Length: 63
Length: 177
Image (cartoon, rainbow over all chains, first blue to last red; front, side, top):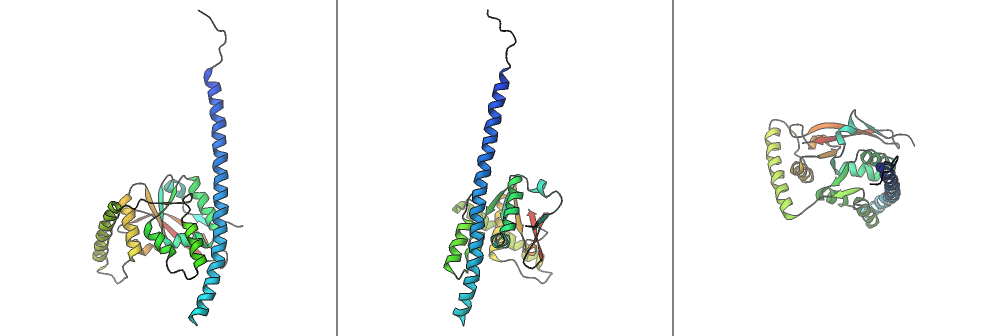
């Protein structure tokens, strides 16, 4: 039987791998959120612009 | 940009990991003010909550828009499923929701018989019925608390939104059934 002196605990390697994966996931999630938020903010700005334009046109149409 | 959303005590705890239905007035508030939208989304994302749109709210948000370009922008806004989740709307679900709406209207009419007041609109009745259908783990945010009376709904939190253009502040209630 082979005796190994001071064996390296196995969980150390696994925990390191897990940590890297988690941080990567968070980064990806943040990036998606930022992209989505930017897209929505753009729509809000356009919406405000069109609402004003729509109100003006509706006023003219009704007159 | 200064802070525009102020929430009640323990708000985070109340909304944590919940599905939250939005009334049309709250979505319209988000659609008009980008600062409020970003702040609100951050609050809900941090608490792992999901914003849910009922089919009737979807309809109310898109109705009566004069300018076609504005309607397209509104469709893109409310149709973004990364922010707002649509709910299942099969015939079977709708039949149950309709039954709930009828039951609620009966309760409302009995409770309101002594008082003078308008009954809630069809859209609000169906939204209440939808929350009633899901019940567990689902909440509702509305600015018109009177359409969701206290003998059915409990207020568990409040979001106050300050508008930068005129400095006014409007309260939106978080309700549970």
